Image (tube, rainbow, N blue to C red; front, side, top):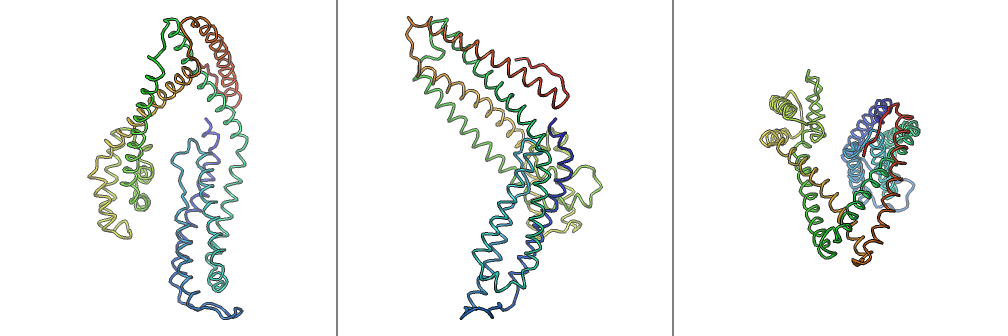
Length: 376
């Protein structure tokens, strides 16, 4: 619902991001042209200048600028909504722009001596500043919607927290009623917690490695996919699959569609319909992608993500249980007192949970026009 309210932001900001990409390419061209420039530095107003040192720094300066611009990512795969996406991209661009300014300060002699050859850099820098301000303006224009969204999410997060607390408290009450701990003791909980943490760490590592492997298969083909989409009559865009296969490929049918498009891309590269640099390398990347069972990788990755979520819940439960047992090593004689205190905590948690439910329902109705009842 929040993303639907940001439709205008998405339409305008996507154009700005596209222009950022064009500016990035123009900046690369300027770097390459300046790197290959065969011109003497202007040292007329300098005392005893070292011409060779200035000329050698010129190339280092161009490469440093290019490297800084290469780090300017115009994607935000992990963003949960459109606002976060463009806010993250804006942060990436501003960081890159700050790095460019630092490089200019570091190589100020080169900037001074070749000032007459830096018009393209200045034009790109000016355009980048304009696009940064335009993005900031678009995001600021949706501050009201963002405030609404954050307010709703604050209550949803509180509701989830209260629900988890209530489950743990009720589990503990059940254990007390049976006059035994929920798990055989603090040491046993510690052992179980260590095992679950190790399992969670392993799953996270495997999921991350698999995600990087999937990205490694498609990343070399992203630029070629854009060119392929440009000449293709297909309504589906191959680049959307290449840029984020995890989100774009949800079932076998979509995967088979992706494979057919990838085959078309490989053929177009081979026949020269899609012109790419290092054609042999890109062809090899396309061949490797088609030979790899990406669908099984995606299914495995989703399974790992599901296991990770379940393990995170279990680790949180064990951590809460361990803290509880460490702070309250009650004897059997004090079980009744513990039960009374536990019941008071349960009642208070239920009260807070009901308040969070009501607030969430009211805000969603007010901000998004949707009537709902939260049952938990």
